Length: 128
Image (cartoon, rainbow, N blue to C red; front, side):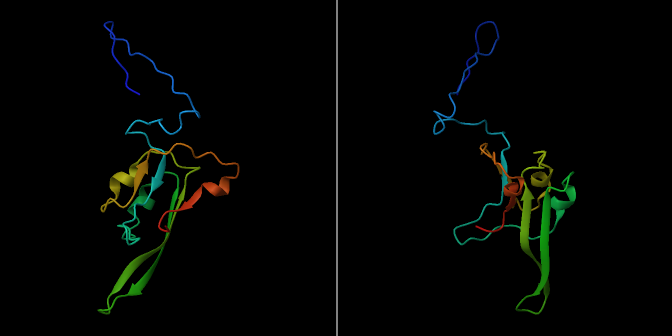
């Protein structure tokens, strides 16, 4: 996918054969395809349910469901129950990722997100 500059300063264009070369097709690193919540090998994520991403989303793409639970020390703690993300209404502005204090969410380079029913675009990110 490398583009070479010619002597004239014009970028050489390349055509990717799709879907034939699906396995070798590489998107640019800055491409925003789908919001995900990375989980570690123990199925834990970094989200603390602060809600800053939900507040900063300009069109309500993110919906958090939280509840207060008591810890072993007897303190109340806010816990994430459900993290819903609507890929169909996302503007890919990255405001949610930029404001997350714990880097709990990020955009992937996945671009094959076409579906026939809109309800399949509503994803629960905190369940793996």
